[in-house]
Image 1: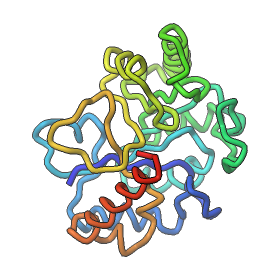
Image 2: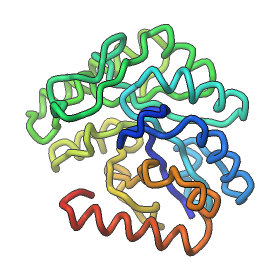
Image 3: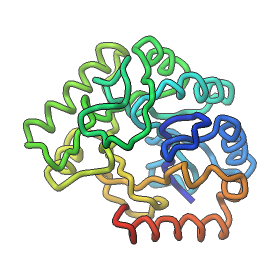
Length: 240
């Protein structure tokens, strides 16, 4: 199996964006016990990589610094943070956020820098987290370049990967991502296939992996059937 896994916040609130801290280390240790390598995205996407997962965190919640960084650092494993740069030091209540969405404190730049030093690669999630389907080509470029410039200024490294806010995209957006990043990741819920369009890669939402009976059996047919069913139900409800 090969998969990109999506996290948002590592906390105990029980929200759809949360993964319990008590299970986070156990989840990663279970991958190791199942002989599933934890790779960076570049390694995972190589044609000769047949098994592995990449860990990605969207938005930039402060709980990633408090509850994920110590585990990532202790285990010496890679992870990617897709950062919404205009939300740094603020909350996740950006303009496109639905009123019902849970509220989270966001990382400040000092914490982003410590994540970068501790094993996280900081990537782009736009500057203001818009619905990219509503943007012109110039607006897409502005969102991406402002985020890239801010990250490069702070970390002396320009993002190579991109995550679509909410997973929303159209051909205009995906064409831009294809030309300007190594790959773009979506919210499409499935494992990586043998052949993929690198502009619109699928991921597995960690919300459905938070149960020990699932993450301790990630490389078994039981887990694969369960996750495939979750993906089917999401699509049935109109999601990805």
